[in-house]
Length: 227
Image (cartoon, rainbow, N blue to C red; front, side, top):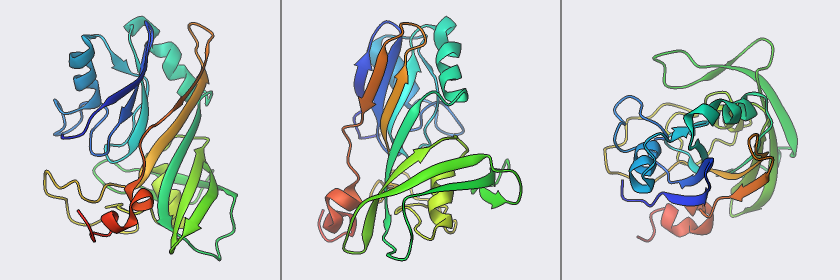
């Protein structure tokens, strides 16, 4: 994985890393050694490091890890009880007819063995605030504030609004697998900010990713017009 894994914050309780696209958070399926967890354990000399939550392999941005196994539950509870403010950024088509901001509520199910999640009738279990930060040349830069954490929630919700995230291999339709080593079109989704009160120290934390989404920062490069 030819991309750096930056450490945004480290203390005796937590590590916050700024994960690149294509790097899995934790070992899963065929991704075992090339994961953020494995790399951080090795690079930081922290064999007991564990992940407090997880980002999809295709999503870049901030991930929280815990240093002490006995404290992991306290940090995981923050996410379970929705006491972490998470802000994402996405680049997707701009639709002038789409009224924003709005809060999207739906029921999302992800079946084992099926790549894409889907929306079904029933009590909502996925809630996302969607805002348009800016737009130009037919593209929008969206600010996404999820209240819940269903699998592929942000990708499903933007697709349902008719503005699927650029580089998404699953929504609106499943495409063929990308050959190993092909990193040209990463999913344009970034976990931009994490804010929470530390359950162990009581400190107030606010972390920001230093990454950018190429489809917005360099549209010509994203479109393949330049290397």
